[in-house]
Structures are given as C-alpha cells and as structure tokens.
Length: 239
Image (cartoon, rainbow, N blue to C red; front, side, top):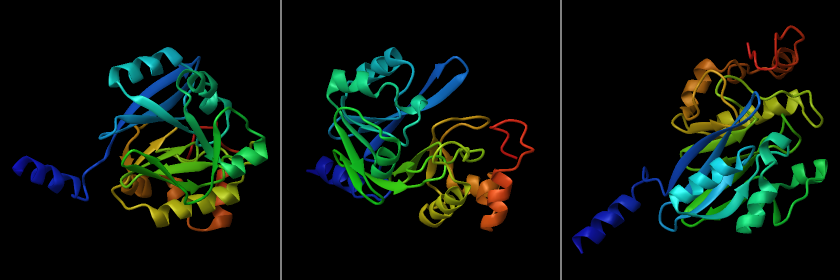
C-alpha cells in the first residue's frame, strides 16, 4: 500500500512526465533532420515525429526501446520530413496525423492519414499532444505540444525560423505563429525543432526569447522585411 501511495503521489505531481523523448539525427548527404520518438511510460506505446532518411536507424531505436509504434505525427509535408511515412505504415500499420490545411493545400496522401486542426488533441496512452496550427514555413504547419515540450518542425528553430518563400509560405503568417507561441508557451517549455544549426534541441522557451531574433521583433512589417531581406548570406544565416 505504501508503494502504491508513493506512485500515486508521483503521478499526481505536476512535474511528472508521462512520456520519454528520444531524438535521432538522420541524414541524407548534407541534409540533417531531427526525428523524435516519444514513448508513453505506462503503456509503452510510441509515436514518431517527422520520420526521414534512415529507416534502419529508426527501426533499431524502436527495437531497443521495445515499444509499439502507434502513430506518426507530421509537422508539414516537405519531403525531408515525410519520406519514411509509408515504409513505417507498412511495417506497423500506424496512424498518420497532419493538419487538414496542409493536406488540402499540398494534396498530401498516404495510408491511414488523419487530418487534425488547431487545438485538437492526439492521445498516446496517458500522454496528450495538443495540435497548434503554425503556418508560415508552409500553409498548414503544425506544432505538437506536450505540457513541457513542443515539437516545431520547421516553424521555429533554436536559432531562427523557417524560410517563408516556398510555395504556401508566408512571412506574415510566420510572424503570427511566433506571436502565438510566445503567448502560449511558458518559459520552461523545451523546444524540439526539425533541424539544429548551432544549438542542441531542447532549449527552453526563455532562451529563445533572449537569443532568437525572430522572437524579439514585435512589429509585423519589420518582421516581414527582416525575414524576407535580400542580404542573407544563406538560408540559415538567421541574423
């Protein structure tokens, strides 16, 4: 009885995580992506966010964790974030989630596809993922928010934000999405982006507020002009 009481006490603690995060860096040539496996601690069910490039590495990690891959969450439809969806669906019959706006605009298709909208909730055992629609990099970009972690795809990085000049991109919408994240996330929430450049994933929101220039621009026109400036040395030179 004492052990059960202690477990109940831990589970009811607001700082208790019902989940584990496992990051895999996957690559193709010079392209490096962050792929995330999230495991619900109680059920041992798992989902993966933006699976790409190295199927063997992902399967190896799933085997090591000894988990059931129930779902695939997609932040957006760019090839470097979705190219392993179908191989994984064929192996595990996993459900696939992407924002309805992204699906409709880019005509994305795959087996077991489930559209989600802003503020929808996806369940994994006892773990809840809240969907936050954050267009800007693409027209229907989606972030997936846990109580102290958020997976942002190419909406925001630790160092900057996604490019806004591809089909469906919009610097104006990117500004609105960043303002939405600023209003939604507590300072201690950890940010897990689709790519890392100079900093490791998992930096806190309060770090981005101080160090990420796109979180410091509060005037929309200024933000748009800066993000779309012609003087950038390369796509990932954020300042």
